[in-house]
Amino acid sequence: MSGSDRRKLRVLSGVQPSGSLHIGNYLGALVQWRDLQDTYENFFCVVDMHALTVPENVRAAGLREKTLEVAALYLASGIDPARSTVFVQSEVSAHAELAWVLTCVAPLGWLQRMTQFKTKSDAASTVGSGLLTYPALMAADILLYEADQVPVGADQKQHIELARDVAARFNDLFGPTFKLPNPMIPPTGARVMGLDDPAAKMSKSTGEKAPGHAIGLLDPPNVVKKAIMRAVTDTGSELNWAEASPGVKNLVTIFAAITAETPDAVAARYEGRGYGYLKKDLVDVVEAALTPLRARYTELRADPTYLHGVLDAGAERARAVADPVLARAKVAAGLGRAR
Ligand code: AQP
Image (cartoon, rainbow, N blue to C red; front, side, top):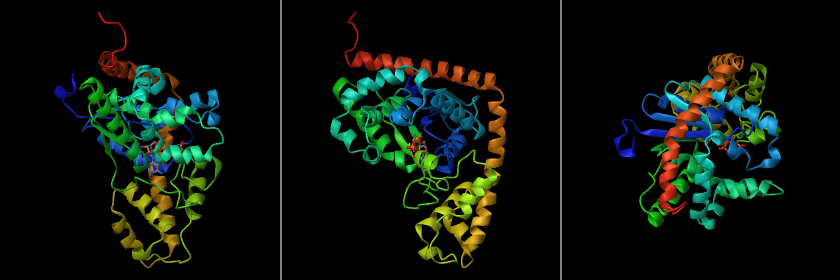
């Protein structure tokens, strides 16, 4: 089916199995994916090749295990394999092939400007080239499925815009080939901040090193409770929404994103009350979301045959869509023999 005669618009998104998934990944990405399933045709991949961009953090057995964990968390969050194609990126070789083509098309300056590259390379002692060229692989992930929309948290907006620019440059150089994708960012919960440091984005890699930074989706209830009750607020003790500090805004935002309210509506209930009330209720709201998710996750991990079956079928469906797009792009770019 070509892009123009598809019945539904398509979405593609993914999460790196680079650590333990947290409430930011859930609210910025997974909840959106879950809620989009009936509206769109969906492709959700575990982007294990992206996790290799910081090879020092990878232990082979560990990465393969995390890949399964993340796939199970997709399903436990409500991604339904009957309505969405769920697969592992490295099992669809078109991603790596197209990534090379797009690496050649993406100007170096565009890649060097990416905020995530600057942040992660500043923090690393040795920087692998993949950390720089990773947005070209991400562009390949998206363009192979002719995705109309890419549902992500705010931190990924710059990469989606780059994918769009790379697609446009390829089309200019080689003729119309790729559909230009758009980012889809949720109104609330698009940038959840660290509970220990509201100036820093909640991230998997920091969460691995700093207890109390993140709310892990698989953290036990007592750990979740401790992280929320100890979350940084400010020197005041009662909520004053008009002058709320970043830490207080973050807690209200997490609350609102889970209960599908606006932050203003949540804050109005706690105005003038001590932070302890907000935190205690937030523990309950988070638990109400995570308790069924953890239970479903445990069931899924107890049935590896089912999980592998979902991922095998997903990879097959993904290849059926991605391979013809790759073939078209290779011909357009002049790769292979003339016949
Ligand atoms: N703090 C966040 N708030 C809202 N959304 C977030 N996302 C990540 N962090 C937040 C969204 O989750 C999806 C998966 O992200 P990713 O695995 O591709 O990489 P990332 O954005 O680099 O995520 P992390 O958690 O920060 O991981 P590490 O530490 O490994 O780099 C994306 O849609 C992202 O926007």
